[in-house]
Structure formats: C-alpha cells, structure tokens
Image (cartoon, rainbow, N blue to C red; front, top):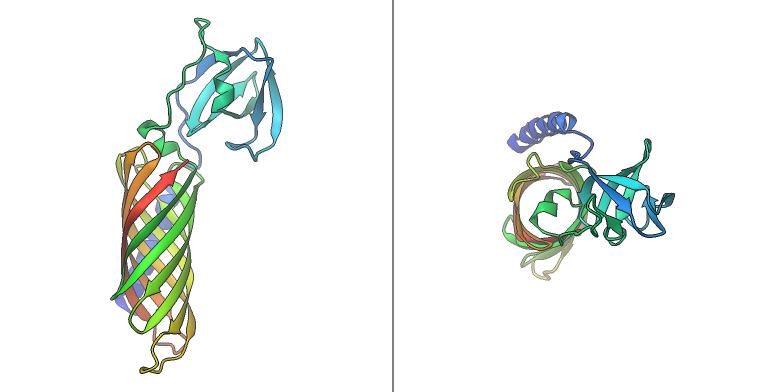
Length: 252
C-alpha cells in the first residue's frame, strides 16, 4: 500500500474518533434574562432570516439568552420555547434595570460562534499554481462542511478541481486555531500544449489535511493549510500530490 494511502486510512480513523467525541451542540453561555419592549418579537427555528417563525414573544414577557451566533441569539421563552431572534430584535428588549439592551458589534468573541465562512486561497499544487474559492457551514463550533472550487495552472495543462471536505476544529475559541480536514473530489484536466500530446482526463480524489485559522479583524480571518491528495487515475497508476494554500476568509 502506498505511504499516503496508509496515512489517509489512519487519518480517517483519527478524524472519525475525534468527531464522535466532539459535542454536537454549541456550548451554552450563562443565561441573561431580558424583557420584551416592542409589541412582539418573532422567534425563528434557526439562526437566519430563512428559517420560519414558529413563536411570538409579546410585550412584557421575559426571555433568557442562551448564546450568540454572530448576529443571531438563541433564547428561551417560557418553559419550553427555544428559538432564535435577530440582533435587530434583541435591541428591542430591556435589561433588569429597565435600560435598552446594548449589543456589541461583531468581534473576536463571535469568531468561534460563526455559522458560515467563505474566502479565497492561493498557493501551490505540486509544481503548479492553484487558486481556490470556498464556502463552509458550521454544524457545531468544532465541526463543519466545506465546498471548494479550484483552478490549477501549469505550463502544459489546466485543471478544475471540485472538493467537498469535513473539518474538525478542536479549539475554535483560540485566536490561532488548528483544524483537520478529510475530503473527496473530482479533478478535470485539459491539455494546453500542442507540442506534448496528452489526453484530457477526469479523475476522482481523496485528501487529508491540516491547517490553522487566525482571527484578523472584524469579520475577517487568515487561513493556511496543507493537504495530501491521492488522485485515482483511469490508468490505475494513482498519483500522490501535496498542496499548500494561504488566503483569507470572512465569517458571518
């Protein structure tokens, strides 16, 4: 078995064990009790305007804040109603002293509570240049899924590379946070040279990787990662490729 093939199997086992040990829910913060000042506040089933409204909290009623995910707050109303309200709605609540609730803007404290991330990365794919755009969704603070599309350019060929990855981030609260990835994809290669005859191809791939995210400012982060790929070519001569990339992302 090729060395990288064995590494992929070992990494997969470690990744799965790590993911199983991570909590599937974000850690709850200390609850804070607030009073609704507007005629009503709408509760959504999830942290986003696209999630349906399932309950309305009327003026004078109280709610308890469980946690924050960027511009959305998970709250409890009554004994059994738990949902999400927007930052704009949260401004229409009163503290125990009767003052309007003051909310800080998105900052480093919200970094570990992000829901979405998107960005651009550039670097090297073996001896070629690679540029990547990506978007990712966080199921929990520690566990996310990511889609990426890359363009790989060399002197003799051009390749388009689509990947789906799972990422495990053990310490999301750290300003410089390591993460591990496991994924699969498809790479389509077209020849660019008339002197060297090579056929076009479309091949599957698998990859494992390690990287770090560093909170930068406001909604921005810097990201560095290294991945090892196994390309399953049609001629049964699998290729092993190392990729490195550096870039930035935004979270929300």
